[in-house]
Length: 462
Ligand code: 4AD
Ligand code: MG
Image 1 (cartoon, protein in one colour):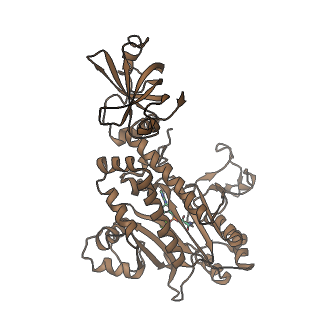
Image 2 (cartoon, helix red, strand yellow; image 1 turned 120 degrees about the vertical axis):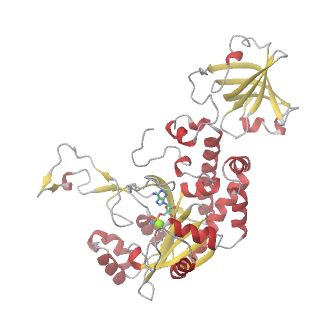
Image 3 (cartoon, protein in one colour; image 1 turned 30 degrees about the vertical axis):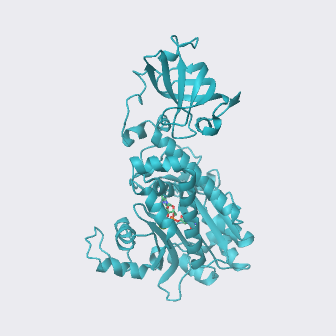
C-alpha cells in the first residue's frame, strides 16, 4: 500500500490503487444511507479529496462521526472513480484519527474571515484555501528563479545577511549589536562600537548587490537570493521590513543587456506560474482579481516598453491628471506617477531608465550628459515598481567623485574600489522583490498576504 498525496489521489491514473492518504479534514457530511463524506486536504493541491466512510468502519460511531474541520487523520483505502464532479474518491477501509478540533473553539470553523483578521492568526491561515494557494505559487516562483538562472549558467552566491556597509545609501537599516542597551559603552558621548561584537557598527543587509558584484567581477554571471531588511517606517500594501530579493549581477552586461535579462526573467516566472499552478491561478482569478490570468498572458506575449525618465516626466506633465505630488524633472517618481504610466498611459509593463543622478545611489554609471545615471526600474500595473537595477560605475575616478557627492568615504569602500582598480569591467544587475512578484502574479492586494510571516512596523508576533 503506497502513501500518496491528495493531489496524486485526485488523478484518474490512481483509480484502482490501494493507498494511504494523510491530512486534515475540511468538512464532513453525513448521508442518510448510513455513511459519511469527508473532504480531505494535505496542502498538495487546492482541491480536496473526497473520502467515503461507511458505517461498517469499527470507529464510525465513536470517532468518524466526530470529525470536523481541522481534524487530522490517516486513511487507508481504495481509489475509485467518482460519480461526482471530481474524478476520483477514496473508499476508506480504515481511518486513524490523530487529533480532533473542538468546533466551538476552532477559529476557522466559521467560513470567510477577512484577510486582516487572518493576519492576526498567522499560525492558522496556512489552513485556508487562499494561503495554501499563495504558498504553492510562492514556491513555484522560487523554484523558477533558481531554474532560470541555473539554466542560464549563473552561479548562486550566498551573500551575507549581516553587513557593515549600506548599499542603498541614507539610513533605514536595522542595527545588529550584542551590546547591553542598559549599559552602553560610551566614548566622547557616543556609543563605542569598537567594543561591539564585530568591533564596528553592523546592520542587517538591505541588498546583496555589492557582495554579488565582487563575484560577478571574477566569475561572470552570478545571482543572490535571500532575505533583505529595510527599517523604513512605511505602512503600505507594498512594503515589508523583511522581504526576499533575487539579484542577478553580470560582468560585461550594459543597461540594454540588463533590461533584456529582466524582461526574459519576469516572463519566465509568469509563464511557469500559469503552467504549473493552473488550479491555484484559477482560484485567484475567481476570488481576488479576475484579470490576473489574462494580464499575465498578455504581458508574456508583448514586448516591454522602454522609456527614459525624462520622457516619462513629460508624459506625466502633459497628462492632465491631478497628482498629490506635483511632477517636474528631478523628482523621485511616486507610486501614483508610476501607476499612471504603466496602468493608464502605456497599459503595459514599462522599464524607465536614465534617472537623474541626484536621485540614485553612488554605484550607478553616470551617463555622458553628466545629469543622469544608467538606472532602470521595471513598473507593472497594480504593483508599480517590481524591479530596480542599473549598470554599475566601473570608472574609479567617477565612482570616487560620486561617493564624495553622497558623503561616503571611499576608504570605507576600499574593497569595492579595488574591483575598479584591478581589471575593471562594465557590469550590470538588478533586484526583484519576491513578494512584489508573487503579489503581481496572484493579484493579492496586500504584500502582507503573500509572505508567511510579515514583518512590518509594530508587528512581529509569530
Ligand atoms: O530598488 P531596490 O531598492 O534596489 C536594490 O536594492 C538594488 N541594490 C538591487 C540591485 O541592483 N541588485 O530594491 C529592489 C526591489 C524593488 O524593486 C522591490 O521589488 C523590492 O526590491 N523592494 C521591496 N519589497 C518589499 N518591501 C520593501 N520595503 C521593498 N523595498 C524594495
Ligand atoms: Mg528601487
